[in-house]
Length: 618
Image 1 (cartoon, rainbow, N blue to C red):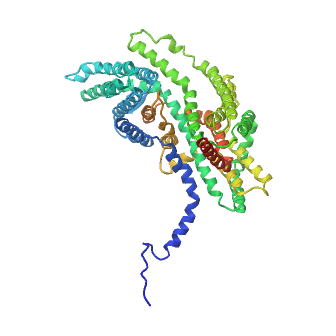
Image 2: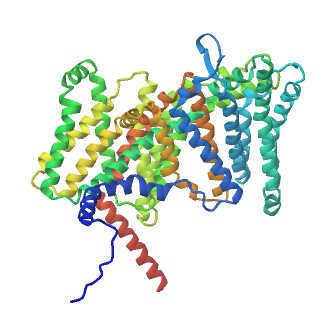
Image 3: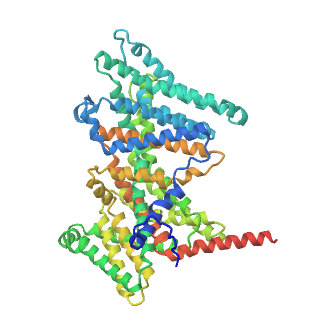
């Protein structure tokens, strides 16, 4: 009888059984990990591959800056533990941490360097827009006041260096257009252009810092912090698109989580799935409805029009999604989703961005051209007229365009025109929601709206479907109803669950915005992989990262100085005007027919392969 040597596995006796138990416990969470974290990051993260050496490292500097600013936003009070400097007066009196100004000027230098470098390799139109944007948004900082004290060269030369930098960077950008049609010459001169642009931006922002430090060293108050504060206060409208995107991406993340939960629940038996759904609906209805029944009774009695408005718009959205968004998934979905998100945020922000440009132009006339007073076109900017008439017209045009794209996509088939049909369905859903809402705003009659009531309506609808189809409902349908119930709970809370989780670690409420901005970089920036003649990939990445640094710098200043910030209002507008139709469209496209979506993608791939094979065989 011989002894056989058993190879060592590295586990103690009984370890394989424990590992199997752990795997069984972890297995249901795997689909959530894949759909909410792994797949979005792999498919839609901000892409640096394909960039040149300079572009790649410049983008990395910008991303590190964004990460540091976002982390600082979560601990903004730490800045205020040091010496504070008063800025403003009367009702705008605020206190500025002394160390904040140097940090802000450096991040502004990084932001504008990235934006202008990105524009250098884009088409002439983007170069002109970037040059004008630099001059307009920085008009408040053109002429820092100074008087010579002691032997401070900064106070003697600083203002002139700031002036040179202000015109050098946009001037180089406009000069580069002259050789835009000579690719070889442009490639040879590109390092020169970048050096001059960086030098101009450095003179402009670091010149301000040089003057500021000279005043501090001499013990005199400086006007630089007042100028920077005024520039931030007047240009905070540039935050609007970013806050819109961050707010809506919280909803997108909620859908990713619930979709993964739906996939995991499909492994359960039919009986277990049904009773788990019953338990979920019972618990949720108790929490959101039964426990607060007196409050809801009072709400309906005192605000009946708000309740009617909410119910009617939910029904209209549901019918619209049923009619236009219930077709097989196509490969164009992720691309169209990003276009709707960023495009919608930009269009809704055009009025506030226009106001920033007009005010900055007025400041330029006064400071640089010596105008005696603010030009009349500043006060004459028709903000309310554009809000009352421009927004309903834009929403109506989006609705008409969406219907046309839907018809065009249906005529050419799903595989030939997938983008048209996907984009058309999203535009129709958003247009149907926005047109009546903007008309109500223009009429100055605000009936009110309740996010919580929408959540209750969705939950009651899921309970009704379960009751009617109790004997016929399958595991997949039960899992989908559970996912819709959870998604409505998460999405319509407007990120309160993220704020709650952050609060457990002592983080402020702005953690919701920080999460949305971070998620846009990690899981919803797939457009940075694309490239075109007018806007190459390098330009897309640098300009996008530069805008992120610029916007987060403004938000960071407002939060640290405790100035009046519009971030909360922008976040609410993002949830209301974009988030609700976005959530309804995503439900129709991704969650309601999850099995059909998986099958539709596979069928589309099979059809494409069959078409390619037929073409190859003649």
